[in-house]
Image 1 (cartoon, one colour):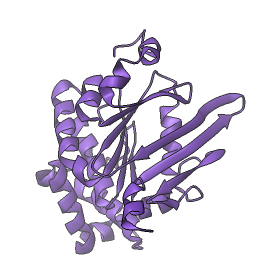
Image 2: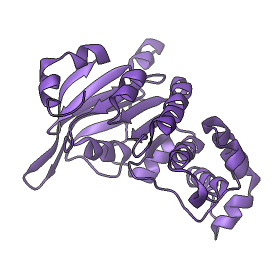
Image 3: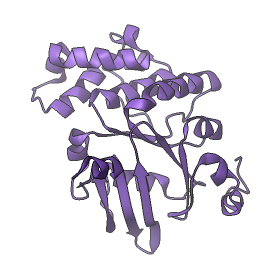
Image 4: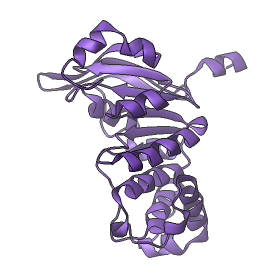
Length: 255
């Protein structure tokens, strides 16, 4: 592959994905391309199929048809752990952290999962400098450097979302798949996470699913709209917002 060809290959790409659940067409020919240093926002009304699409991109679900590529490599057959080891990191709409562990232990476990270290118990991971140094660096990135020794249960909701992002960063990803990172947040907490994503964006290819339209239009370089599992518009956010089909899809929602 020449340098020009390599430059033309998206960091992460979905090609014509289809997913059915019985008679329900949950994903209908979905194609997306993510590039390093850019945020691609995927939005749509409730039930549009956004989380199903994200599950396929992360390896949690296999598409019935279509393919998924990382730096030109077909990763469709790989499961979620294998994709994570290649650099595809996902956060979830519902916070997924170990409440009884410390902040640092949570991130160290994420490092361990990528490094494929084998320990009998999480405490070994928490004491291993190879893991904790990387964990502390990730916590520094997200603004939780002073909270490493705190129990996760004591954190505010917004801090737990920051922790999830730290756990994703600790796996040294190329791609960040973010499922409603602002979910359940107040305005002040949302501002903290939005500012964090602005700082991080240059290093990663980011797919953002988010209901907060202020955040979407603040962060997105490309905006795609999913309705009934099918993309109805994709392009620069301002153009997509003015698309008549998009306005009709959001007629009953704030957009």
